Every structure is written in structure tokens, then in C-alpha cells.
Image (cartoon, rainbow, N blue to C red; front, side, top):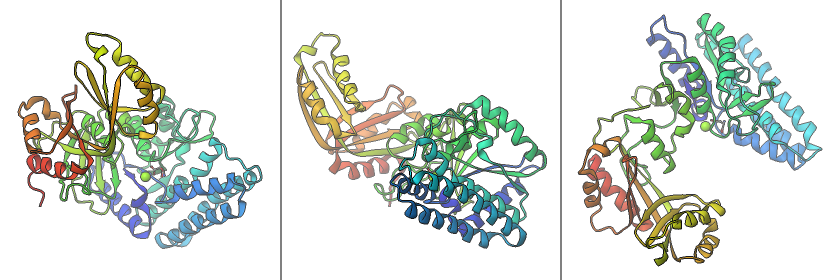
Length: 455
Ligand code: ASP
Ligand code: MG
């Protein structure tokens, strides 16, 4: 069970989490191992710690220590509301110890005006160390048998500080050593997400948002039956609610569908972070800690959705279309590789591509280097560009098997002009490029056609 930062932001949120964990223990068969709890830093704390690191790098020791003190106070104040007596005294001491260790680093480094990635990770890890200590104490206080485990002693990574990659074998071995005894006692182990150590025991982090990744890594190493990602939304939706007024919840989708949608900003969870779990066929469920009775969204390796042809729609706004035309492309080879080489040289990713005999159209999201790209392409082709375009992507495993899907999508769009159209090789998505000004209307019409009227 992984809980995100907003799920442990304050006393009320932590109260909801303890109730969710208790309910899990009541519902699961007594023979099952107790759940493993992975927790993010309290909301905004990682941002705060990175600010502390910035002040430190600037040599602004006072600001760094003041900010760090505020973060410590917030944890201690919450501890006083979720624990009492000896437990409060113990967790307060532990929290102070974590923050004192970090302030020692800040003091030592601020005179050097330098924070290396290695030290950045040491500072950032404070958030998950503190949140996990706090949650373990709160669970114990509420009668759930819980034990805090230093996640750094379990998750082994390489030495790519700030974006470390897990060492699955090392983590597996450490998990057996550290976690099996906790489970054998019937205790719920509580660990911070996001943090680990190298083989030599130096603190690392997995990169921003890395707690989901930690949950998937632990889940895969322990071969759990399910991974629950508890967050503050109901799950994946059939469309972005800022674009389509009343999207529906997607009850179930495949990992591949989630990956197609992720690029287009379906923000709930980045599928690549759950890859360790999905590749071992462990289902991942997204749940809302404010609405624990809702079914959420289940992501599995090969779900066949029963919802209809499409699983969800996504859109990406403000993209640039580049049209490249060359009569020399006629019956020639090597044209595409020359063309993509230009994008490669300017490190710009191309998203949608359509081709005809003499022209190629591509979309780019990151328009910062479009001017030099266009200039270089002009060496061998005619080039034009159009800004303020958008991509709509309709995703569904069942697009394969439904020959009417494409026609229905196009006719749902009616008279809205389409700039590029593509059905991906995976045949799991249909992509349209159109004017950004039309995207909202187009999304609503598509949503109505495939998921029913929105209001
Ligand atoms: N606390 C870390 C972050 O904010 C990791 C996480 O929340 O997943 O990026
Ligand atoms: Mg987070």
C-alpha cells in the first residue's frame, strides 16, 4: 500500500490512512502477510527540502536552517496530534534526529557554496525518513502493529544520484533480510518511498515522484498479490476533466494503454514507475484515500476492458506541426533518416508522424529549437511550420478488433478540420492533430460518441 504526499499531509489525512490500513488487515485472510506500507514525504516537503538545498548552495545558511526548522516543526506538530505519551516522546526524538542530521549537512556545506547531487539526495531523503517515522508511530498509536523500517537499508540502487536505478537482485536480498522478520511478527512494515542506498550504503533517490517506483520495486521483490497506490483522485478518467466536463472513471486498463495515455498528461501515475510490478504480472490499483470505498482503477499487464471500444481519450495542447516536402523524396531512399537526423541533432523528440510520397509531417511538443531545425531541413526540402496545434489520442486495446472504430471517431469529429491522422502500429490508438482552438470541442464530441453524453 503506497500513500502519496497529500494522503499524509496532516492529522486528518493520517487518520484516514490508519483507517484504510486497519480495514485492510480486517478484510484480508489471517494467513496473508500484513501489508507493506510505502509513504511519500508529506505534501510540499520535498519541494521545501530542495529549497533548503538551494539556499545552502547559495551560501545562505540562515535561510536554509530557518526553512529546515519550519519543516521539522510541521512534522513535530502533527506528531503531537496523532500520538501521545511515550510514543509521542519517542517519535519527536526520532524526527529531531533526522532533521538535526540534515541541518548538520547544511551547516557544513553552506560555507562551501556547493551542493553535489550526492548531498542533494541526502537532504531530500529527510522528507521520506520523517513521513515514514510519523506514519509508523500513528499506526501503532491507533492499534495497528507497525514497525518503521529504514527504506535505505532495503532499496539498493546504482550511484546515479537524484535519479538512481534500482538493483533488483540486491534489493531482493536486502528485503528478505530486513522485511521477512517484520512480517513474521505480524507487523506492518512502514518505509519511505523515493529513497535508497548504493551497495556501499550512500543515500540515493529515485527521482521526483519516485515513491510509486519504490512501491513497485518492493512489490516485485516480495511477489505481492496487489499493489495499491493511494492518492487524492478517484483513479484514471476517460478524459481530462478540465477539457471534458464529466469524464467517467476507467475501471480497468492495460499497462500498454496506461503508457499510451501517460505521454499525453494523464497525470495520476507514470506507468514506467510501475513497470517492475507489471512485468511480474502484479496488478496495480489506484485508489482515493478520501473515498476509500470507490473501486478505483486497476492496471494489469493485459486487461481487456469491458467498457467498449475506447478506454480513454487524452490530448496534448500547444504542439507545433512541421511539414517537410521534397520532390527528391520521390523514389529515393535515405530521406527519412536525413530528416530525423536533424531532429536528433537538436535533441527534439517527434511525437506524431504522417507521410506521403513526397512529404512528411511531424509534431513536436518542445518548440524551443524549432527555428534551427527548420533552417537545417531547408537544406534539402521545403519546410513550413504551424504553431498552436493539438494532438488528440484515443486509446483502447479493442481498437484492434473493431473495424468501425476509426470511422466512428472521424464522424464524431464532424466538420472539425483535421490536420494529421494516424492509427498507430500497435492499433491501440487513433491519433488526430488539429488546431488547438478546436481541441475542446473535438474532445467533447469524441467523448459523447464513445462514452455517452457528458452532461
Ligand atoms: N517526495 C518525492 C517527491 O515529491 C517522491 C514522491 O512523492 O513520490 O518527488
Ligand atoms: Mg508524490
